[in-house]
Length: 147
Image 1 (spheres, rainbow, N blue to C red):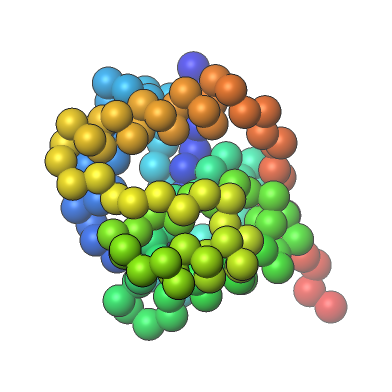
Image 2: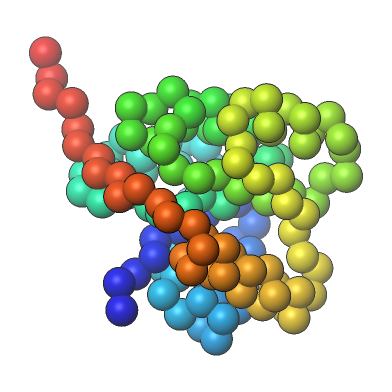
């Protein structure tokens, strides 16, 4: 079984636990790389060599400095990172958040589920679409040589 790596950027550590538990039965190929801040996620992306994540789940409101929208803009400017499909994962009901996420290059804007059963359905849907249906490019990262 080839792992399906998903970069998770969310300041709520409980979300990573929920996703991992839900994926155990609905998306066993999923391997979540949890990060909780813009800086941590940017460092992960900058240090990455080899095969990159196949998908990113990105919280829109990181309450630890720069926002998920700021990280979205950074990824969309990255030489390899711009190819990663990004799902904005938010509890926000604000239509302006959705518009801004799509304006900055999100592939999908989705609401966070609020029960474990709903998380299982959500993760199962991720598997059905992103693993079984979509054809994703293999994205290889390499550090640029210092000048």
